[in-house]
Image (tube, rainbow, N blue to C red; front, top):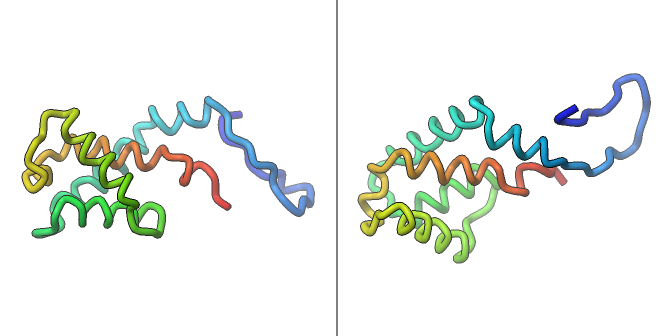
Length: 115
């Protein structure tokens, strides 16, 4: 079974914390997750005149309920540079890059485990 779930016929006070490589692979390769990332990226990229850092912060607020850390903003900048995008303000036009950023965020540990 890729994703474990509670057994509805038994009572159990607390679920075991489990994650397997197949869960991560299923999320990483899922067409549903890629489509969700694309829709999210389109919304973020079309979010008016926000700066790059504000868009990254907005993405973290939406995904994790918290602001992006300075390291996470730097990670996003490095991601742009790795894709040959030097102008942060023009990054909003690069929907494919935003899609990949969103996809990566959807596959982080913070969304695999619900504490």
